[in-house]
Image (tube, rainbow, N blue to C red; front, side, top):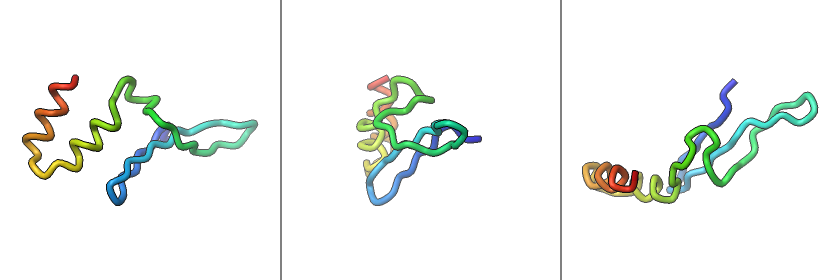
Length: 64
């Protein structure tokens, strides 16, 4: 089982977490990662959309 999946499509980043209700499993959209605690998804998306990859890496690293 994969506890969390991320989808990036058309400039939108969505995170889904695997939940168990009764005996059924389903993915629920969540606003923050439960597997990567503390990650700023808005910053990550901003960096993903940057044209210059070096600038994107520097920006993300500076925020850590």
